[in-house]
Image (cartoon, rainbow, N blue to C red; front, side):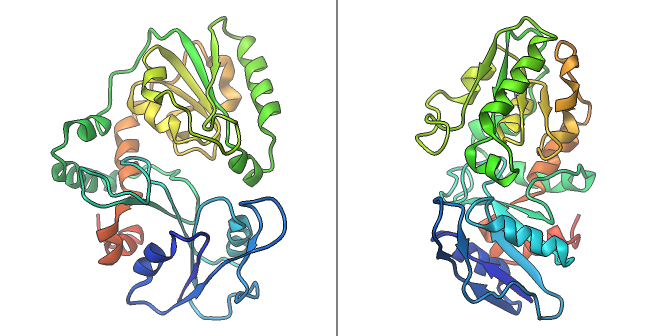
Length: 295
């Protein structure tokens, strides 16, 4: 039995596609008083999971979903987390190279943490489908950059900070102070949004900032994935999808000798192995792949 928790207007379709052919219950959301994006509830859900063999689906780290994650973990309920893909754009717009949108789907976590060689075959399949040179370039690992000039800090968005019960500005200050103990390189802080909370996205493409970047320091931003593919070494938290090919945030004393991981190729396969096209969700392939039915 799949419990589908809707979190915003655009999520219902792909949650229902994921559950197609399986018993499911759909829970629509309602706003409650409080800060926008953080307080929602599901009026038809009483907080329990009375059915047998329940699995839960929800999207995003805002709109009250932390309560769902905690409830699942406290009750040993498997859950599927949906969000924007690591590569190939956002989950609402069809990617021009594939003609359909992509979705990140992670089981029992909100980020891809483990590296698994089984994803190589899927990576090669996806690559074979694509004839667009720019898209293929984004799937191609670049040589490690060892002559960059500055360090980029990617702070968590306010949404992410609320999820992890942290404050953005003190985090930036602490990271900057720690870096300055070990390097004289210029440090740039790149916010996801221009007003630091939820305004327009940063107008400068990340790819432009990465050209002369020596290393990136982030919490769990997907910018670290783009950096690593571009050959820029990373320092990231244990919650980051870049965690397995980065030094941790406790290793900033190594900022001048960053990690040039030899696991980067398998890590890239694993990113693709944790995101799916809409057609793969509709045909049940995504559910079965996530649960180990295919290589």
